[in-house]
Amino acid sequence: MRGGYPRGVTTTTDQQELFRFLEDRFACAQACTECARACALRASLVEPDGTQKQEIVRRKGIMCAEVCDATCRVLSEQNQVDETAIRVQLEWCRQVCLESAHVFDACPGAEKSAAVCRACARACSDFLATLG
Image (tube, rainbow, N blue to C red; front, side):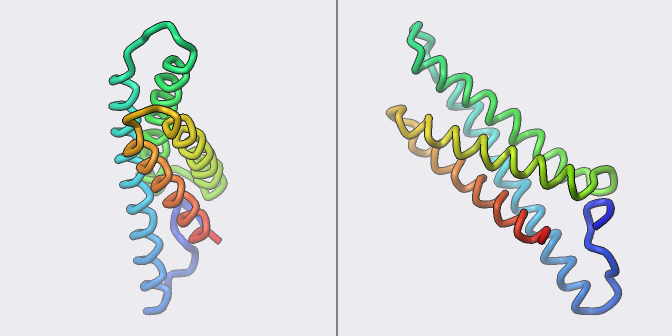
């Protein structure tokens, strides 16, 4: 793969695979955007009370929002990112989302944020599978 697209798109089947690839890429980028939004909101709702738990939730929310946002940007840069960079970014995003979901599970009222993080992690895994 070069430039974010599968090689040798020459037949109808190849074109269908390309469309599927682009749809999967878009779905992953959309999940990253939703996760970034939810994590930024979660981080902003944390009242700093001096406890380590609250600080961890806030930091995880900020980190997850930043990683998801960066992943969405990588997925949007079709001609400037190679397959290796996409794989690394997707794996990083998947891991951070899973870690964030785990932290949010222990935070009352953060169930929705945890679910969005898990959905983003699944989207990253699915897109990694598309890359082969």
